[in-house]
Image (cartoon, rainbow, N blue to C red):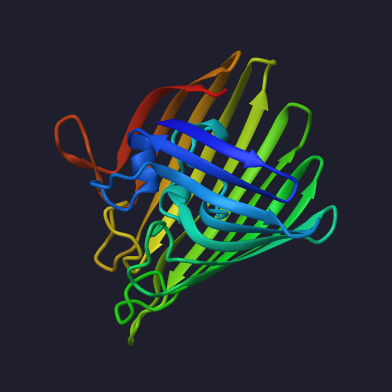
Length: 290
């Protein structure tokens, strides 16, 4: 994945044009494999007052602990909660500074990840309340609205908590938990998913840090398909442990990463082409930012 970001930051107004190239960006940003677009974010903003900022256009989601770009994440791979939550939005949002510690955000947006059009003529609302100190921050996020074609699904509700704190000079702990529920249009049970993840990270020196992401992720009533193995009731869960190192050489960061996924139902394929409940993988990520 390669990002080229253009921007202008004025006293009152500015813009960001964030272009993305490569398979990681395509998987994260676009709705279809044949999309010819290269836009990750494209928005303008207006500082109406010292406390109120309006953003118009296409922007990455405010929900979740992780980001699309690997330059913003400690781990190279992404969590299930982030991967299958909303990634990008198009709409209007208002960021409000309530005080030095407290903030809020309100938004009206297209259905999630429909950034270049709105084929369903439905909209979703977003909201956030934030609390920030020198040693960390906490954000409670919400989204609500019809994410699909009218007549096929009811409204979706999501609540998400993202927080992270420097417990000591070298030890950091992040936490993310989320819950998503979609109501049926007619009689039936709601469907969705939920999960929780811990992100403890320890810096051993100025150049090296090591961290573990431990995640539990569960799907109920067929809320997602082709994600993890589901039983006959559409339920399934996965536990993931991801061990990642960050070794910094100037602007370059090397990220060796070992990951183990274990599902409640057979979902992965082993070396003998047999179905299995676990997958072990290793990746060496190289991230350069300037």
